[in-house]
Image 1 (cartoon, helix red, strand yellow):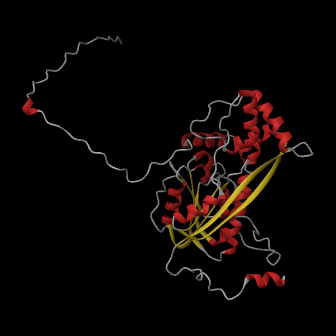
Image 2 (cartoon, rainbow, N blue to C red; image 1 turned 90 degrees about the vertical axis):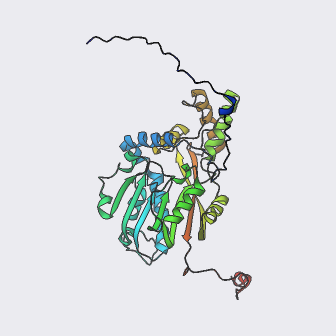
Image 3 (cartoon, rainbow, N blue to C red; image 1 turned 45 degrees about the horizontal axis):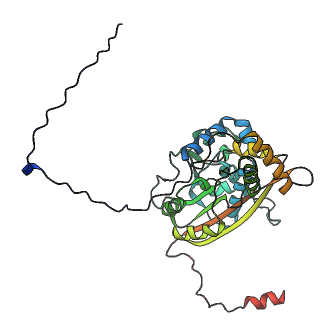
Amino acid sequence: MNCCLRRSILHPPQVPKTTAASLTTRRSYAFQAAAPPIHQVFNRRTKWLQKERAASDVENSRVADYLKDEVAIRLCDRLLDIKRRYPKVLDLGANSCNIARALTRENPDLHPSQPVSDPIATRIDHLLAVESSEALLYRDADLEFNKHINMTRQVLTDEETLPFEANTFDLVLSSLSMHWINDLPGVLAQINNILKPDCAFMGAMFGGDTLFELRTSLQLAEQERRGGISPHVSPLADVRDIGGLLQRAGFKMLTVDVDDIIVDYPDTFALMQDIQVMGESNAVLGREMGGIQRDVLLANDAIYRELHGNEDGSIPATFRMIYMIGWKESEDQTQPLPRGSGQIDLKDILEKK
């Protein structure tokens, strides 16, 4: 088939003449936004791509899940202190369903008085696991633990906008996903909204001092080799801020605690490889694109060993976990006694010990 391209000549349209009497003046008005603009720190699409790539390497990503599995177990252990049944539970930012795997563990109660205990999943009627990365969410859909819990997987295009009605869930869990949220106060407020009255939100996220060894050594290495620094480790919330954010979102009876998990690696290259396979690489907006230069990596490894290295030649990496619990307000909820109403002096108890 023959095609011909012909250049056409466009004649300008005839504009009618206007007189002074026909001229009108339009006035525009400025309206204040309903809410302040959200400060964007992380590139959500970049984080989605990182998770998709990590999940595509199934075997290595499963091996690198040791940290997420451990944190999920420690988070779910807190449910042992709450004697309730949960008809509907939400796992927000489920990753590869690490929480579901932790809920199906046998004998989760390690107290000597309970040598045999039922899995926590026996107290959950239905678990909804939501995640933005479909490949990561369904990575372990064929494993054995799926048979021991009634679970549904759902892909969310945006984890910062929860498409659920108010008063829907009896419990909301989130493990190692909220540190990538741009609007953390807004997401916490949405979680409070979708919870039923007198129901809890339990979450775990990386804290501010996570990977401080890598952060400091990279900065020194770049300063030495390039004469400046660029962000390679994402900014994280501080434990002192979490309580205020939960209170601002409307939660009551707050509990916030910190736990440091230290993992030893043979070198910094193994550490950064595991971070990449976890899907936890840097996703800060405005970061320097491309890989870190070879000379900077070598200098970073030497500085890391000099400042933080172990005697056996390995290097430690600190992961600071912030665990949080908040309850949605209810009229019949247990309330703390008024200040000054206590009848026992804590000083007397401590002196007896």
